Amino acid sequence: MRWIAVLIGSAVLVGSTLAAGQAKLDAKPDAKPSKAGAVTISLPRPMLPNSFAGWEAKESPKSIADAITADPANAAALKEYGFLNGLEVVYKRDGETLTLRALRFGDLSGAYGAYSFYRGNGWPKEDIGNGAASNHNRVMFWQGSTLIDATFQKVSPMSGSELRELAKELPTAEGTKALAPPVLSDLPQKWLDGQTTHYAIGPAGYAGSGGVLPADLVGFDRGAEAVTANYTLNSGPAVLTLIDYPTPQLAIAAENKIRDYIKAGSKAQPPFSKALTDSDLASLEVRRSGPVVALVSGDAIPDESHKLLGSVHYESEFVSIPQPTESEVSKTGKLLFGIAQLVIVGSVAALLLGFFLGGGRALYRIARGRPASSVFDAEFIRLDLRE
Image (tube, rainbow, N blue to C red):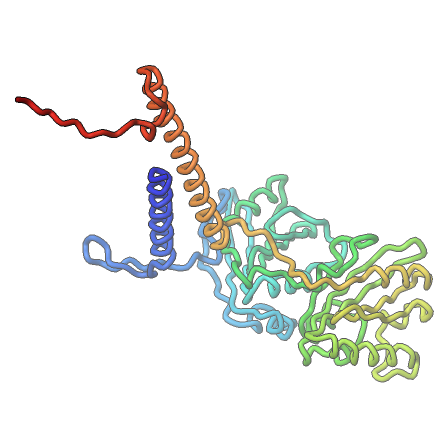
């Protein structure tokens, strides 16, 4: 028992030392004195590298300070998505040119929203970063909170792998900034047309990406978020609109308002959008699930539209994007798991050591004709009396 206590105490002491060391590493300042007395400053990772996959930046990068400079026509939408700044770099290689525009947002949701805003429906999907699509010589992908718009002078079979190499050098989002919009998890996957999802958190982004309802009716001023997607049903195409509200109470009020608007038909104010006008009025239907209001439109028969709408089920779960780097939670978990392993190994070693040492001593006593344990030894006092 003494051996077990000593080994367990040693294991706990080692684990505490490791935890303290890890805490010191995590809490290290950005600037610290070097051996020579100078100060070493940790600079943030650049938005775009000077070179990658053989491409070299031959011109000075062009800074993008605001949304108006980035895209004057869609500046309002970029501001809604939380645009911070950007950078444009022209790369050269073997006489060819590659132009990269990097737009940085406050979090991953903003980068994804801008990606879905600019990506056209039907663009082929590419395996780059967190998500990508291409249109001839133009490739667009998002990595963390950064959106990359790449324009090749000439696309080659290696263009995709070159951009994947670039994606590895881009900063990644962590913590709450790495959470994707939760409303995306409520989209039914059956019959969904790939690369048609558009996410909006404001009226400009919603209208610019082909929103079905009037932006004022959605209620972005009350914290609503909307996502639209196309579905291919047997009887025709359909568009599903999901609007996520902060509370179910707001969703109930919005559901009644949208239902009344649909029932008004040609008398509705503001007038129906083209998407609603081209829809089969019998197929237009509104339904609520928790804080999410769903609207189905399009040209499918009512039975199939109703079935699509019924497949929307709200689940209070966050959608996260796998992070390529190890998170702090993962590091802590590994540290605790290592301490537990050390304690278990030490305990087993102590038991085995006690078994072999104690068993060997017992065998030795039995071989000499004594009891296995010294407990049974008779104790007496010997008096050496001499005359």
